[in-house]
Length: 241
Image (cartoon, rainbow, N blue to C red; front, side, top):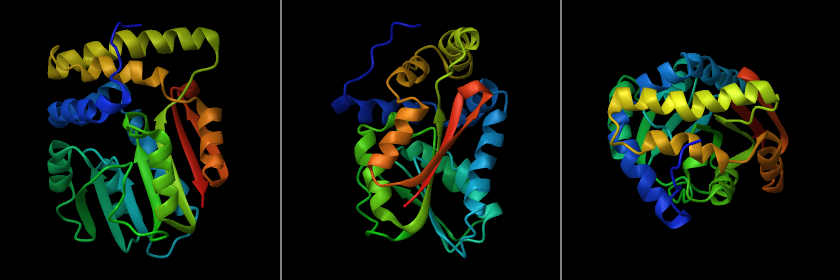
């Protein structure tokens, strides 16, 4: 484990915004190397979960969109009415804007995942979040907002870190996540960026698979399910309004 001290809830948003902004240009490379490119497969599973719902031209919100890789998959794989790619890091959105420039139905938007004031109640069909929920200042507020803007029978799909349950594998997973992953980040982006110390420590404060399922159900989501990847190192949750 490292000695990084998590920012408190009042400082977290500014910390995440500032430090994610600094690594925006290297973020995709970091994700590829740190997950051995497997995050691409996991994000493909998110799209499959949406496709199974059989939406006709859905309105989609890719929340905490980062560099827009999930938004790109949505545009490529789904026949959509509109896709809104939302993040509060302007540097991340600049990369997303370039990535999505050939998709006129996609709108890039600066926004806060805990206050989706630009969206009315029951106005969207699909909300996705990829490795973003553990970075918001209030998990409950964000999930409440997601639920509010979804239409009845709309789907929320979330991909983030999970908890490994098998003791031996858990030891190796923690060693990799807390020791090796930060070193990869330092090599890619420099030792001065605190984001690579923050990322593993933030996982300690993020609910495990069953607790997050319960949180979603308590917010009103139904048919909540989850799927573990790599023994639970990453987990996809999905549920309906």
